Length: 591
Image (cartoon, rainbow, N blue to C red; front, top):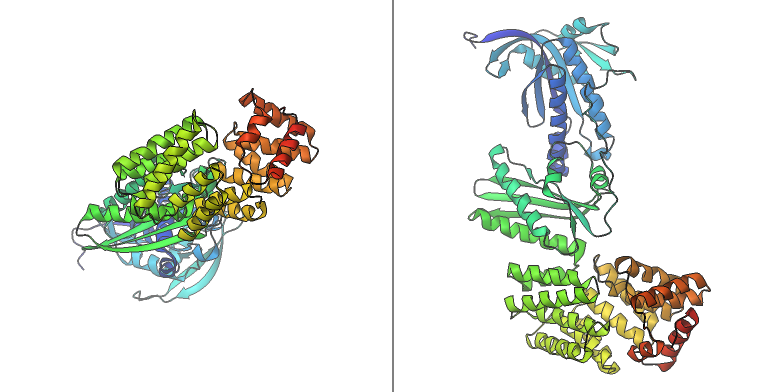
């Protein structure tokens, strides 16, 4: 090839590539590309600090040039030290080791590109280096010998492909006092530790463009934004904002570090590979503390309608995360039944309002579920959940007229059943309505129908447990209440309240107090939980705790009367009610 028209210069050349890159990609291409992107940013920064220039970074291979051999070697050593620190945070099979080769030679310059034997020799020497190691040519060695505090091993002359003469090669041995990277930005570690949220929590890492065409970044960026916009609407999910996550595009940190820094328990990451009219999207939910994959899925679609595909994939991913993190299997039914986005949003807002269990929250839930009914009049979900809100208002004695609330709950539950409901929710509500009417046989029968209709429904198990508590069968209620809590990470305060009552009914007072205190942490004015604490503490002889609970009861309801309380209780067995009232009287509550 003629050299006419090309400038020539003598430079130190650094060639580096990843060891076992294909293996890493086959194991997890999203994680591999994300790690490579972060390491590439780190290496580019170090090259710049050491007065070099990155000529190219294609795939897993980097080519850089430096004005002096000293700068090139200093940069190579600093790079391997920095990457070693980051690799130490990864499990062995996910570590990304680079080999680095250095040579001093004459190159031809064409714009930003460099060519010549010097480049080829650096690449061949790199192939001799061990994973995480550095090899240098004799030309580099002669320039730096005795000028840097590092040691060398003479590997002798090596014949390399397409180079006529053998090349003497040295391996750099890094001592403990080898030069550190000349930047404070290389290993920031954990910038800030935030306590994990007590709600299901998630950070969405920007989806990686796995295509060779960088112009396809718009598609992966758009998908990331679509997913986050949809996730925001999931009630009960603590979601880190998009701006915070962009900082991790080129930051070499582990999932555990991100979890610590942001106070989240799970991460969503994924990648997009687009070719012609085909797109493949991978997504995986990762437990931040362990790196364990909780859920993973791959989607192959045709791009006949780009935005329709984004919407479809977003819906699939958001539904899966809702199932895994928040609403349990109920999420699938919700999203299948409520196709109107506004109806779905009002449904989730109503569900969130139920968590508070105070009058204003219950009224807000009623309002939201009534809106769901207006938007989706043919769906049984709005009617069933509105029935729950009106039943809860009567059950917790928050209504100005319990009979009106109970009547409305009955109408709504029956309407849901008339719509060929297959969710089991109306059966749950009818069971509770029968309980309030002290129709015990009908109540337990409806609870059984609810469980049979939806064997994975948290609400069915919780409401059946509630009925069993009043039927003097608390031992059975305990396991059902615990199952309800396991099935949905975000649950209304009534779930642990039911479990607390079940433990109390079995004279397991310590456990009853633990569950009741969980309720109080979320709803300080929950009378049912405070009464459990008062009674259980009295039974354990913990007088001061019992008195404190009684003071809280009277703060909330100064005119509290044991006689009125007894009338409101739904126990089938009078002796069970008598036992409860006697213990509360001993705690200090008066008739």
